View 1 (tube, one colour):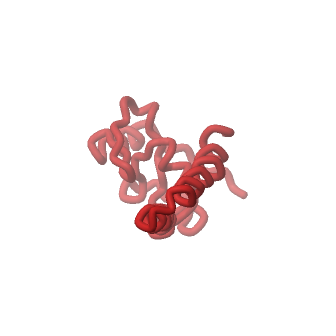
View 2 (cartoon, helix red, strand yellow; view 1 turned 120 degrees about the vertical axis):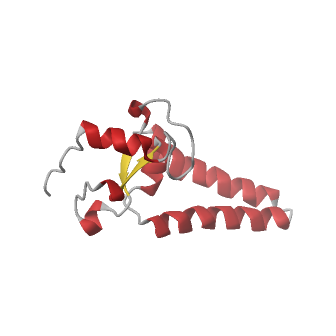
Length: 117
């Protein structure tokens, strides 16, 4: 495994302003460049360590961790599955199962990826 090249400060600054200081995925405001993580839109493991500005997106920590090495399509599919599953259960008034799905997502995805790091 080769070590990835660091992203130059000037490039990081361009990425930070690319979406008006907002996360490219959820739209949350990034208070400073230190709050931003640079995401490779096309994953490094599939397309190499491309530091072209077109492939770099500003991301909040949550989105960057959840997207991980997924392509944007797989990332969106995963989010949509969670939303669809929960919505269907709410429509059937199966509140307990909807809550269980959300609880499972929170503890197995959110906490495992974000809090335990």
